Length: 303
Image (cartoon, rainbow, N blue to C red):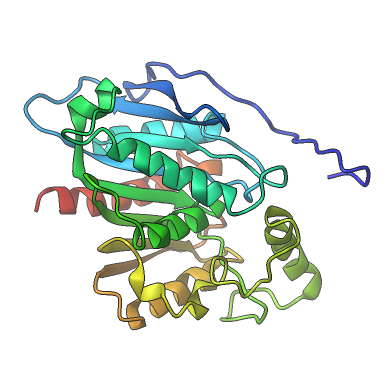
């Protein structure tokens, strides 16, 4: 962001949908709300299943609320891997980014994507065949990393207050969630004001400098309505060397003590940094995380 209010994104690359030769996952792009540019990339495993429906992942990408997209190479490849490993259908949401579209635009766009999916449940008249033919609408998961995990949490909060007829959010997976607050917490969170200012700047830019750091959307541990989270299972994935590690741990503790009636699990990867699974997707820890997410999802789908 320059002083003359112009904006430049340095890694604004995209890749087209495809039949991925490595994972054998097929993808295509869909338009959800053309009036404001909300779109998504839809993924299915190949070959597709016969005789049963699959869980659906609603994947919400990170990027500090301001960068990346559902069509970025790193996210396209990672969702391919998730779909192949877990044997699921996925919808990767391309929400509007800040600062041009400040919070709550990303929350509203992602909730809009959920409603679009719900319109495909039995009798609702949605026209996307991949959803109609292959998705179990009682087994939908919100999955996000970093800022995307923040968005996933806030969409689950909104879903707890809004009826989504024909769709059930069975669970949520938060990877390295971007939460913060005015006061430092835990042993891993930096105390240095310069470092904290870097982390905090993302939220200030994302909200147009209009929302404080103890707003419950970025600091859910202070939210008295946390118990209303609109899903029944949550997996929080943190990394030992991540500046945001303690925020994920404290979120898990606060959710567990809030009165929320659900199943909660905290999973920590030792020796890794923030969203390492995107920068090092082929390392052993990234594969272990992929397996953990897959088992979390498929545990529910077997019930």
